[in-house]
Length: 191
Image (cartoon, rainbow, N blue to C red; front, side, top):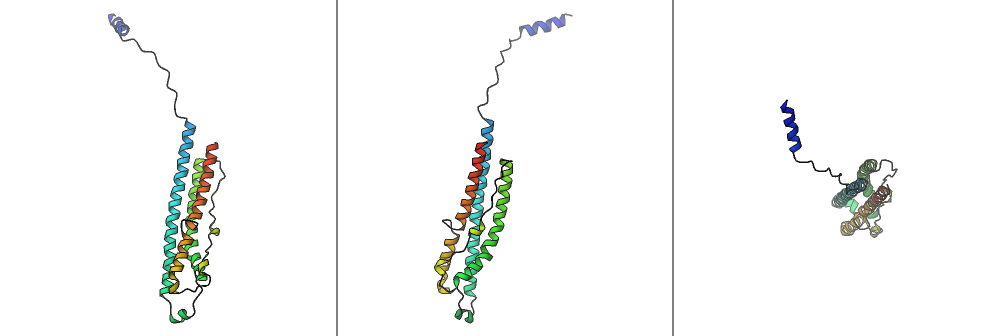
């Protein structure tokens, strides 16, 4: 019987318990943190899409220039006499070599954006539809030129201007991408 009383005595002589401090208030606003994470995902999508578009357009530019080179190298004597207008030939090749493959890539990016919108906002009806019809070949420098080997440098310069990053196909698509990403970010900030 002395046993229980000695355990009680040991408990009484133990160090006094310190008062319990109230839990610290969180210094992080959870809603703000979620918005920042969503913004990071949106910006990451935008940057990856810019890179994908630039890479695709660069490859398509090379393919179009290769098509021009093949055509210029494989000209028969008759075709050298009967020269096709360069502007018309490039417009036709542009549709085959650039617009169609580019539209496939853009549809993939639109699907990625739709998944991003669903995961970030859930209720947004924001959609991305790249305006590929605005990508029209404008080879003004070749208006009165024939498709001749002597015109190759002019043709390549016009292709690079059309496809390039300043005012070209790549720039147009990246601007559309940035605009819709900014719009989604703005909607996300309002929530």
